[in-house]
Image 1 (cartoon, one colour):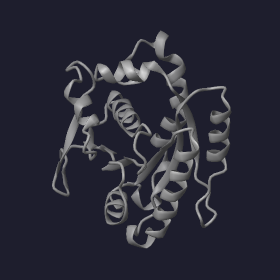
Image 2 (tube, helix red, strand yellow):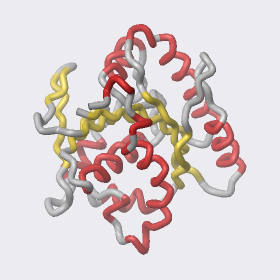
Image 3 (cartoon, one colour):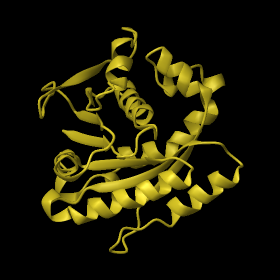
Image 4 (cartoon, helix red, strand yellow):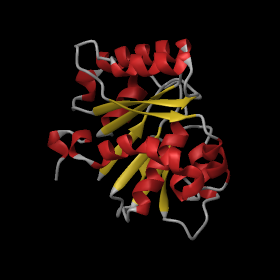
Length: 222
C-alpha cells in the first residue's frame, strides 16, 4: 500500500486542501484510495461526508485510538495530519509514510515554522528508521507579489541540515476554486475545466512526482 502524508505542524497551511485533492486525483485514475483525517478539526472527514455519490469513490480511514482502520483493498492511503504534532506523535505518523508533502504559506512566520519542523524531523531520523521522500509546495500564494517570490526562492533553495536538497514541486495560488470545490465535496479536478484549467496546470509538477518512482523510497518499490 502506498502512503502519502501531508504534514506541517503549523496550523492553517492548507493540509486538508492538498490531502483531499491528492486523494481525489488518484481516485479519478481508478485507484482504490482511502483518506485518513487525523486532525481533530475533522475537515477532511467533513469533506468526505458531503462528497457526491457519483464521483470517484474515496474510502474513509477511521482513527481508532492510535490505530487507523483502513479498507483492506486500499492501494493508496492519504493522511491529513493534525497541527501541533511533535516528538513521539511526529515520529509515529512519519514512520507510517513513504512520501511526505510539506505545504508552506508565504509568510515569515510560516517559513520559520517550516525550518523548525525540518530540524525536528531530522533530529528524529533514527527513530523514524526509514528513508521518507519529502517535497515542498508553496500554498495559498498571491501571485506576482514579493512574498510569493521570496517563498518560491526559499523553497527552491531549501535543504535539510545534512545538506540534502528538498525538492520544491509547485506553487498553488490562493484561488476561490478551492473554496467552491471544498463546499461541494469535490476536488479542483472535478470542476469545469474552463474555470479550473490554470489551477490544474499548477498541480501537474506535484502529481507527476507523486505518480513517479522519485517519490517512493527504493525499499518500497514493489
